[in-house]
Image (cartoon, rainbow, N blue to C red):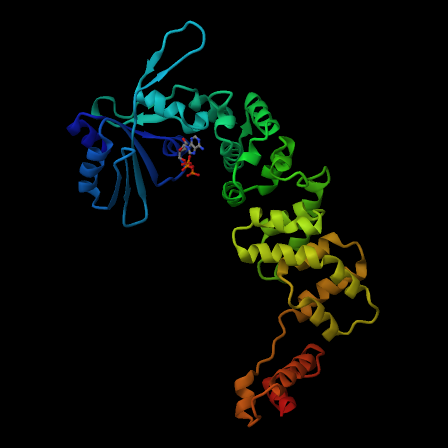
Length: 398
Ligand code: ATP
């Protein structure tokens, strides 16, 4: 349809970027970026008569966005012709609009286009070797200053490498390192770093991404105390072992959170706050990481005490997230503590009283602070294995 609209308006029309990459990779992608060599606004208006989506026009930039009912979006940009000044005596060179548009992009695999007009429908435009890099599974920038110009591309390189399990081409790695040496990551706002890190976290294989980031000096570029050592991959596989040991015992501990905890495990406590936010999708995540790491030694000390009874054990551990249990079980060498963690998870963690305040009211007990006491005593008896049924609970409450 876009090609037909382009033909009607006599405008060269292309689909560009991630959509083309994913088409070649035969991966689903419903975010379509169109580029037109002509009036993008007029093009978008006509195109939307076919789709009847929500149309937003940005006259100043000559761009438009059509959002369809199913959430799919079509971005339309107008490409401009640009002059490129080459050093030395070479003349100014006027490049075609599509070339200029593609040259502004990040990696070769992301800067291909497919023409949509009828006469050349389906023609792949690949000025920078994107197809070859897809074949060779490489992330490659177009020019050496790319990361200096836009340091978010450092994180984008990691993201795409992780997503497709591609390598980062060697020269591109050097350019990344040069940009970091020049302090380019520090020039990004914390919010932008967080956004980019979260995109990376959402991709699969966070472990690999972290290893690459460490290798290229990106972690240190984010925060001088941040980093992973040679034993990190091994610790990660221990976490995986623990996860499989606890399978079916805990509900769904989040491996991503555990990976982040592992990375921050030796981070100075007083500086934890500074970095946790960067790696957290939301406040809940940040809390889980903070609680697990900052309570670690206190929990170990409490669990080291002799002759803990079931209720004491329950009280020490029941408010902790599942991830803390997994993390402590992996981290702590003491077999007694590990035993406690497993015993608690299998036997005690899910214990709750059947009865609530409403039942106490029905029993004719006057509402007040005694409710907390009664419910706690019922819970204690239950954790200790002295009562089982709701009738037992009601009897004890009374
Ligand atoms: P995703 O599947 O994650 O959406 P995408 O390739 O579509 O991948 P977007 O972030 O949506 O990524 O960007 C769309 C296109 O815009 C990219 O394919 C790339 O060509 C270009 N682009 C985005 N961000 C940058 C950037 N920082 N520098 C250069 N080009 C960029």
